[in-house]
Length: 276
Image (cartoon, rainbow, N blue to C red):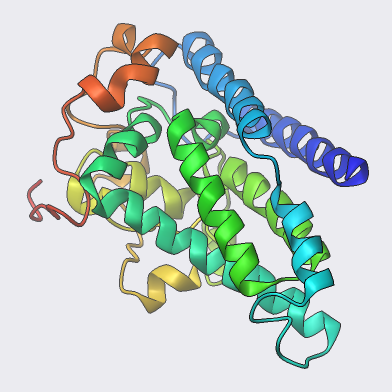
């Protein structure tokens, strides 16, 4: 367990540092709001959320995966297959569940209210990928625990998946520039920053696309893929129409936003038109 914590924290620190430096050396867009204030509140949520998870959940996903493997719980433990197959399939299936979870947080009005905290960021960088309301994180934890119990993926697959999920959240939210040819090649398999940035457009019809965090296949399979924003990456507006005042996006405002804020045109419930 200590080794798993070291792996996850070490990977987080390295990926955060690499993407942060990349954003300085090769930014994709010019920031539109003060970075210091945004990073303060985004990183405050980043600290609060794992503490709450540790306090409120007696079992973590890796511990549950070990118990499932020992007791032969779950789909993958009930099928005879090589260890490498279970490892790869476990990561792919868990990634698909995260895609469906993301869809759910856009489709259900009460869950969208929580997810608005993520979308209300007025700029787009690696800290946006860490900015989630604590209640959304707790619900996500319940979903992950349920998925691990039902699927029974190998312990190693769960550890690698957690590292990939956190790392890709920072990478594909990064304000980083990739050569167009490299972006086109990478997004055949994984979600790139330019691909996911479309999802943070203030147009509902664009925010209702590109739900994937890691593998880009899910958006293509389920018809939620959009290649580019209509106004281009340099001209597009990030965030939600109903939350445009930086002074009202402090940590206290973010914590109460789901209960006091206007939900606007939430995805999949009101998809919007091409003009919205």
